[in-house]
Image 1 (cartoon, rainbow, N blue to C red):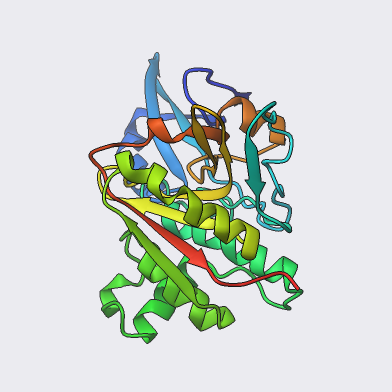
Image 2: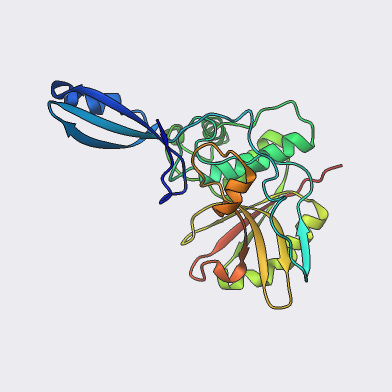
Length: 270
């Protein structure tokens, strides 16, 4: 049975498990796998019905690309967009459950896909496990980092891009979301010169974002955000657009109490 819960942003896959009450004690063992998100239990006479909500679908070989392209454009002002093609990497898209902690890895994977596709490299986008192992090999992390749910930020992204693709990156530190307007020229210059996606991270606003464009109007400025927090299988760009997983976000909507870091990969499409 397949259901869609409109109160949340991801698809819900539900299966009903009918079993004797004696087997209820086995449920914790059965559902230890993180592929299952939540269990709903109801009773039916001498049986228990468990509804298990799953969210992990591996479709990493057929991810949507350039999901920003159908967004409405502005009538006035100046818009600068990345060049080339990228894949939309997000929570769980490769069958690995990283919900709640893996957004930095997913933004990195989106940038990796841009490099691989546009440079015609015969490589695969590194997995989260591969990224963790590499950071340990580079002596940036302890061995306990492998298999952990520890986040990564712009510095780790710089290390991975250099190690896998020999790409240098520039890190820009912004003390507050309120000061983001002072760095719009840096973002614009990056897109004009390199055309590569940018990773954004922060502290109070700790949700990683991929920036693929910017717009400056007479009164307001916007960043074009690719949000890696989507869960499930993205069926269409329209679905992502309608649920704001890809969006124009006003710089006024960034958190003023949060600092932000930008990772700007210094690589061009030839």
